[in-house]
Amino acid sequence: MELTAQSVWSNCLSFIKDNIQPQAYKTWFEPIVAVKFSDNALSIQVPSKFFYEWLEEHYVKILKVALTKELGETAKLVYVIKMENTYGNKQPFTERIPSSNRGAVKSQEVDVPFNNKNPELKNPFVIPGIRNVKIESQLNPNYNFENFLEGDSNRLARNAGLAVANKPGGTSFNPLLIFGGVGLGKTHLAHAIGIDIKDKYPEKTVLYISAEKFTQQYIDSVKKNNRNDFIHFYQIIDVLIIDDVQFLSGKTGTQDVFFHIFNHLHQNGKQVILTSDKAPVDMQDIEQRLLSRFKWGLSAELQTPDFETRVSILKNKLYRDGVEMPDEIVEYVAKHIKTNVRELEGAIISLIAQSSFNKKEITVGLAKEIVEKFVKNTKREVSIDYIQKVVSDYFQMDVSTLQSKTRKRHIVQARQLAMFFAKKFTKASLASIGSQIGKRDHATVLHACKTVDNLSSTDKQFRKYVEDLSKKLSL
Image 1 (cartoon, rainbow, N blue to C red):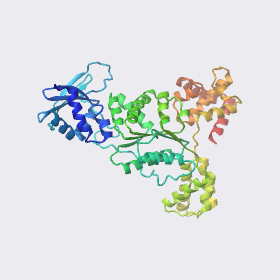
Image 2 (image 1 turned 45 degrees about the vertical axis):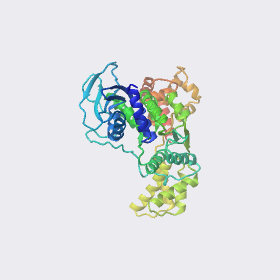
Image 3 (image 1 turned 30 degrees about the vertical axis):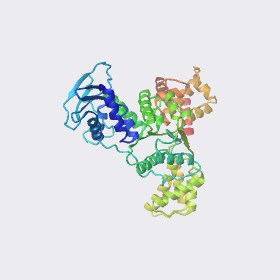
Image 4 (image 1 turned 135 degrees about the vertical axis):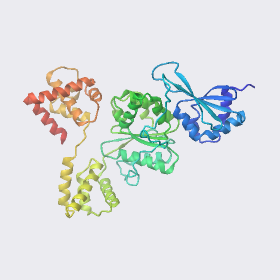
């Protein structure tokens, strides 16, 4: 029977499959295609230079054994590295690079688009000039399950997180989407899951990244013409944690690349964990194909903690910091700061600091003073929906009227004010603001903001509108 590239590689794969972990086999060997067999040399095509380097680094011994078993001691393995060609050239140049003499792995071929530079996938977390093969998880060890106290407000999300940590990629909670308001512990819980997985499965690659940083890395990869390498880097992660996924709103290029990464990870049994300030059903300017995938697993909400949970959080914080405080003070703080765990802990830290630095006794009076200042000085983040409701109520109209296509002057002004405050009080992009306020484009929002600035300085009545609404939205 005549040997072919496919038959030789198929026999090698049977041997390899029996000797490595199933997930490693899926990730590193299933994507390989056998393309040529001649002169006792097998050519295999791999997706990127990074892929080849990873095989060389981790699997060269098993490849050598498998190939020698099939073809004898004179066997050679040739890599054909297929790089993405973003210039659209159907037949990029091929450069043969002299091999390092490493047993069965004798040579490599690399497809290089339009130049003779050697393209390499870079770990986007590595500073240029510093060699670092290891992927750091970017996790904060202070955000663990021990100091994420359970209560009615977070029980579902916390228990789902523990289930994922015990069996990453092996539960129906994939992806796990944790959503809720500002300061309720989304980031803390996401880190806690990652840390628990690292403890239980040290061999797994866990990576935490904000959606904002992910977007910036993607933009950089496009500029440097290594988008394909960027994708392959993220496809090797076992547990990918993306924080504030709503930041992808309106960013179609980043959404597209994340779609492909997500599919690859999900299909290969890798775990995806996402956090967001809203449920999938309420996300704006996120492609439907992505939203549908967000709904595949579990969406768990973090709600505002009740009084008992707030007291427990404060007592746990004081215990960790080795500080004693009378119950009545703790209860006073818990009673008056209700909506944000971050503010809650911040207030208790301020109270300890004031007492320590000014040598004041911690009393209810001091607690009242701190809480009043703290709550007053804490800038509350508001949603675009809330801004539209406040502006509509102020001008005594429905939100649907505010969003309508009518060109009546008072409605146009109300709409422009809503856009102005959305830009001022939220982190949403101009495109996202326009889409949510009557399906306008970013240019309309920009024009609205300029108009409000101009009218505020020339029209006394309009300036009063701005001042009144600023007060309402800043409360």
